[in-house]
Each structure stands twice: as structure tokens, then as C-alpha cells.
Length: 311
Ligand code: BDR
Ligand code: CA
Image 1 (cartoon, protein in one colour):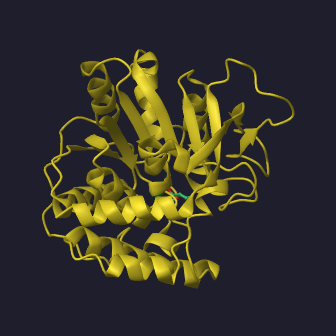
Image 2 (tube, rainbow, N blue to C red):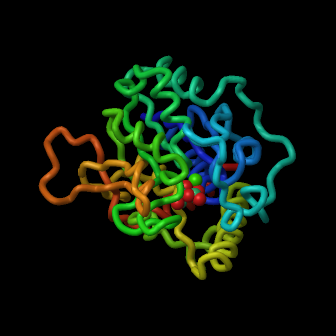
């Protein structure tokens, strides 16, 4: 039995790795990919998603979504890590897979409603604007989704601010809607993804995979390492987004704890923070979980195997 997943992303190096893992895992059926402005503008990340899927030989449809956060018309992009194109230094085909004409929020809602209730898992790996827009326009999806497993947030330290992580900080109001919707949410945040370090041994392993997807993964890891080294001084960058996909494939690899999570939309220093309340045992009906512990060797095996299985 495969699990139907829909990835909402902003590729982006680590988003590209998430797409490799989702497309190449025998446990998953990738039913669609939607895009949102984040690491780069909507045009750039949409073009990247389409060209990545073409290279991977995937038939998943792609639909483009929000150009900016719910309450602002100024997207904040991240060229210092992902380059001017969103994937600088990575070789992709000229042409991508065709673009679905529907806006992402409609594509997401229709895909969920036309499938068996409880069968689709949403994996957002960018700002949560499209997912919130889908909930606002079609609230029935909340009870129809199996789970939302998102890369974003942090229990402890952030990356764009002391407490805020890029995807949540980019659109805190959207994140607030997603965390409060009432569906099960697993937050795969920085506490977890900082354990997925693409060090030289990992990069060497990717270089040895004799497939197009393997080459893409190797190029992504090399370029990501270069920009992280220049921008943040790391030698082994945290490969955030595929950790959320790994949670769906093998939950024991990405271990999470139930905890109430709220998104701070107001704080002067803390806007975009995911506030996790660990003061007491979580209430029995808590729907949110924070991922805290990664089985890193098992995670890298999943990613390398996926790249080896693809064309
Ligand atoms: C997240 O921000 C983006 O730059 C990455 O693609 C990842 O989704 C990490 O904070
Ligand atoms: Ca991302």
C-alpha cells in the first residue's frame, strides 16, 4: 500500500532533495506538487519544480500558488542560500513538466476532495500560504486530510531570527491558520533538521549513485554546502525538507512528541516563533506534534535509495 502525498514547496536545494525522496520512495505516491514563493520568487520556484520533476521522470502535476504572504505583497526570498535562480549550480532540463492551470490552493483542495477521505498527506516545505488559502476557501479539507507533516518552526533556536524559522516567519498568519485548523500536524522543525547534516561522507555517497537523480542530489548537496559555508560558516549543511518526507515514509526515523504548538504573530522579537508548551503532559486531544529526534543513518539510507531507484 502506498501513501498519497502532496508536496507544497519552494525549490530551493533542500526542497529538490525532498522531491527526490518523495518521487523515488516505493512507499509513496506523489499525487501533486504545488509551489509557493519562498526561497525564490514564485516564477523561479515553479520553473524549478517543473524541471526537477521532468529530470526525475515523475508524472506528478505541478500547480503554482502564492506570490506573497497572506497579508503582504512583499515576499522575502533567500538568494544567500539558494542563489539567484533558487538552484544555482544545478543542471536541469530546459523544459519542465506541464503546469496545471489551477491555482495551488484550488488544486490542493480538489485533489484532497476527490480522493478517499483520510488518504492524502500534505507535506509543506515552504511558507504555508497555499495551505492556509486552501483551508480558508475549502474548510472541508481539514477533516479529509490524513496528516500535515511540515518542515518549519523550531522548539528552540530559529534561523532567520532567534526564535523564528524561515518558512513560518515568512507567513506567520498562514502558519497560525494551519496549526489551529484542527487536523493532525507534525512540525518537523530545526531541532530535528539540524541533525540531518550533509557532511563529506554523505556527499560522497550521493556522488557514487549512477542515476540522473543521483547526479541531481550530488549537485544539490555540493551547491548547498558551498552557500551554507559562505553565508553561515557551516561545513555540513542541515538538509531540512526531506526530513518531513522521511517522517511520512518511516515515522520511527523522525521521532516526534505530542505538544500544543501556537504560532506567534505579534511579538516584537518573536514574530514567527512556534511556541511549544512542554510545561505539563499534553492534553489527550492534542493534534500537534514536534519532531525532536532523527535516526540520521536511516534517513540518509532512505534518501540515497530513492535517488538510486529513479532514472
Ligand atoms: C527552510 O527554509 C528554506 O530556506 C528551506 O528550503 C527550508 O524549507 C529551513 O528554514
Ligand atoms: Ca523549502
